[in-house]
Image 1: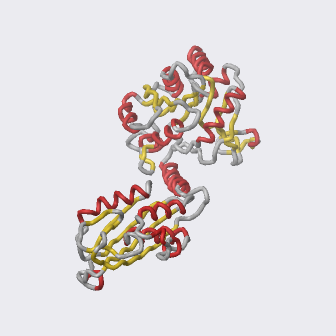
Image 2 (image 1 turned 180 degrees about the horizontal axis):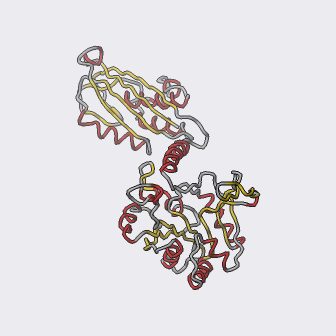
Image 3 (image 1 turned 30 degrees about the horizontal axis):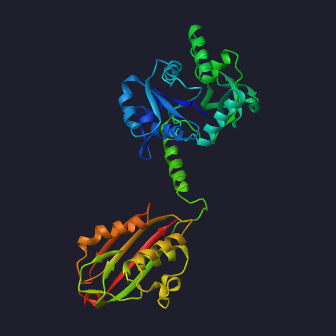
Length: 388
C-alpha cells in the first residue's frame, strides 16, 4: 500500500557496547550495522522509503554510512530521548506517509517477512508490534531473595518494528509530551491513549545489538546466513569441474583462442574452429554439472559442427546448465608461441560476455620449450569451473 515508510532510530549512544563510536556505525561483516538495518526496509516490497534519525553530531557519519542506498528520504536530527527522536523522524516523513514502521537502528537481522507481516497487521488490526515469547522462568525478587514466580505464558518481550498509522502515532506522542511523560517505546505511547496494540510473532534472529557479545554473535550469524543465501534454491552444494584439451598447429587454419583471432602463420586443426581454450572450459562446466563432455555432445563426426564457432557451442553448454549459477572459471593456455600477453584482456572479455555474473580468469604459460607445446607442434589448455 502506498504511503508506508520506516523511521529508523539511531540517535542513541549504545554505552554498553563499550565502543569508541556509536554501535550502529560499527562494521558488521564489512558494512555498518545501520546500513544493514536500513537496507532490509528500503528494499522491502511495500515500503516506500525510510527516515533515519541520528545524533546531530553524527549526521555526516550516518549519511556516509548510507551512501548509495536507495529510498532514504531524510536523515533527521535526534532528540534528548528516544520519544523525541521518534517524533523528529515522524516530522520528517513525506506528506503521503500513512503507515509508519519504527525500527531500532541496531536490529540488522529484521527480516522482510516480519516487516510485511507488521504492515499486514496494521491494515487488519490498526497496529503491529514485533514480540517474542519469554522462555526463561521469571522470578520476582527482593533483597536477593525470590519472592514469587511469574506466569510466563502471558509475558512477551517487545521488539521492533512497531507499526502504526502515522497520524495516530503522532497524536499519541503529542499527548505524552503534553502530559510530561517520556515513554520507552511506541507501543507505550499508543497504550496511554487507549489503543489496542496487536502483537506479531517475531523471528528468532531479530536481536538488538547491545553488548560486544551480541556483536560477536551477529558476525557469526551473518556469515552463516550469507553463506546459505548464496546457495541456489535447490540446496545443491557447489561443484567444481576440470577440463583439458589439445589441438595440433597446422598451416592454412586460423588461430582462435577464447573467441579471439590471433595473428599467426599457423592455426589449430580440428572439426570446429578448434578453439582449444573454449573446449577445455566447456568440458570443465559439463564436468561440474555431471553432463558428460563435448565429444559426446558435439561429436566430430557430425557435419553440423564442421567449422563452427566454439563460442556458439559454449553458449549451448551454458543453456544446458540452466538452474545452476556459474560462479568462477579459470582457463590456462599452454603455448610456446605466439606470445599471447597482448590478447589476454580481450579473451577474458569474450568469455565474460558469455558468462555474466561469473568471475572469469584467463592466463597463459609456456613449457620452457619442453614437450609438443614447447616445440610449437600444438597448444593445450586446462580449465577449472565452479558452479552452484
